[in-house]
Image (cartoon, rainbow, N blue to C red; front, side, top):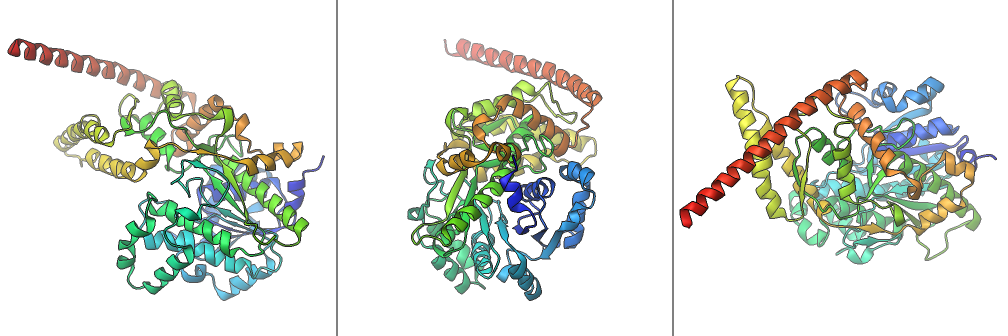
Length: 504
């Protein structure tokens, strides 16, 4: 049986924003490896002294593209850089490139965003909301457009703790168009605009979720007859199977916790162990993006035009049903595997204490993080080296403060549209574009993800020799950890005994 989705992408021209990001690169790699796309235009900006073509050329040395380039050595020639920046008016795209896009592009994947929770409001609004509005305006000029996928987030409406596949305009204190108009009016007074954030955000915990919610409202109200859909992924983590298992190259969200615990740096965190762990593998996200684009195009072709009053379809992507895991199981994966995939650069035996009380977390950090950090820094100073541990923990604590709301609270999701999409796919397409979270084996996934984190994120040697060296170091730290625990227990007993003798 022939793959309908693969056939759909044959000879297509696609425009991707956010293509240099974590999810964006996986989408591009899958398109090039599994389909016969004609061309992929990628919105990208110069960065760190590299121009746009150099940044794309750098993908040739990225492990993510290794399987692809072995099979199709020159395939990256199909990827063409479009210089631009979502922070700029009109996306920073030149008139020549804009004409090129409007004439050739048939499918858009808009994934560009800033995921910094502490971003100033004007920056987050420009990138996450205004750029979405400008992408819609550009899409309306694309004569050959058959599908437009807007990549949002499952937490865009996090005021509700059960989020289904609908729009939530009731949570916005002001409409997206009015906020954008206010931003334009105060274009030269960004400080004044940013000071209005508490009023505008209202119950939203940060500028990221707020501006993503505004972007969704723009899709709802401004898409018109465009063939648009919204993809809402939960926290995106390492690949499950393809193109290589366990690949990851960023320290965002839940992975930051695993990363810190695995190195023995993070020992206490504000975390609700009973809350659902809403993580999804990045290759499943890429497959769902490509699948919902296909479905959106098919439905638009059947309707000929959007039904008035029928907003674009939303696809939630998060663990659901009986295959949901909680944070206790998520963190437990590190504890179970700390001797299986140990780090050679570990600084202490990995463990984590969790609390849902912010005040208790602050108190615990004094004993679990700051006091040990000051002791290490004093030691480094005595050796004539630069102290660094206190600075590292200050950065860790700032990052935790920014995401603490999502570590303590609990969310669950409904995904009937995603379920229906999976059911309508052929067996061939279900295998080629797999994204079913109900069938994910979490135990084997964590094996692959932790090994991948060790290899690709921590840059540890994947050889058995390296693992054996790390295990020996881990065993030494375990002995020291137990001795420290025993010493603290003895001191505590001695103090209690002294107090009893003093007052009795």
